[in-house]
Length: 154
Image (cartoon, rainbow, N blue to C red; front, side, top):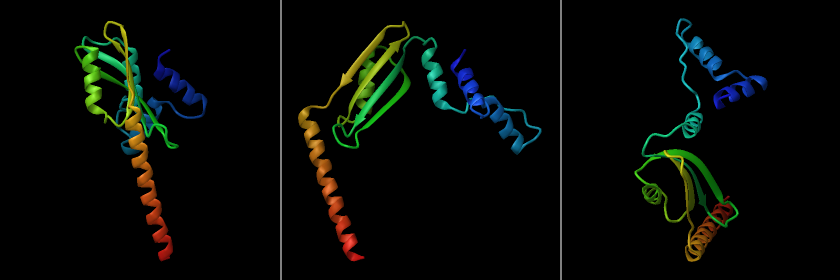
């Protein structure tokens, strides 16, 4: 059973409509004579299915994790999946290094077109983390100082 069929079955079981039925309903609302368009309504589902299929030469199916505000109360962990075209895993690392600010820690786990698995992790240095925390703390102090002034004005 494909992931799309599983999601449709689950959605139907929970009382919703399947993607295909929903598209037919939406098309009928706008134009009763219109043919239903069979496009997937969920781009993430397309990427997910693409990652599970065979890759073409020069493609890497990547799961990328980015950690923002590391060590702070409102730490943000962002995970996403993407197919990256590159000649080697070293090139994938270069692409991601250029994309992400060095102020973030990040990691990637990838599968190449031959089925080989690769992984890489970039962690901020302790000094960079400390500098980031101090800058964030100063920013918070400045915000709270401004809020006190606003409250005093009312």
